[in-house]
Image (cartoon, rainbow, N blue to C red; front, top):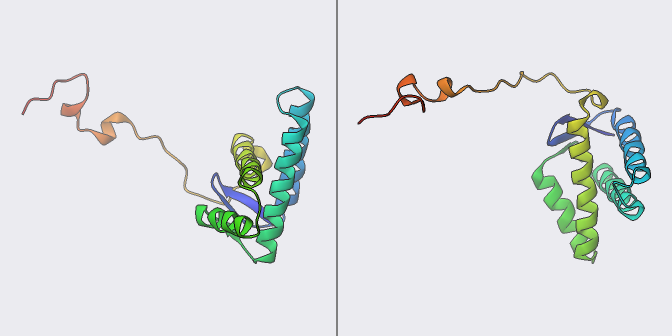
Length: 135
């Protein structure tokens, strides 16, 4: 099974079934709240299910933009309509977006912490906006 390890990456793990169950419940809640059409939620779920099946069949253990392009190419070569492919990709995008927004649902792999770069770290003091730059 797959799980999110970075906002844009998936890898093998047992956590994906829990992640998908939570995401399906969140989609259903959005439908009940009138934020998402039931047909859209169904298409999202179908697309993610097909993607997961494709990953398992191809022994895909991590997902990158190239992986998604390969899946898209496979779908189109099977004769899938571009509108269908786009709807399924919208599901993948929705899953990743939701996973990033709801971090507690995901067990993140140990990664170095992300630090914001402050303006003074990028530009020397003389080049900060508050001081004019003279050549």
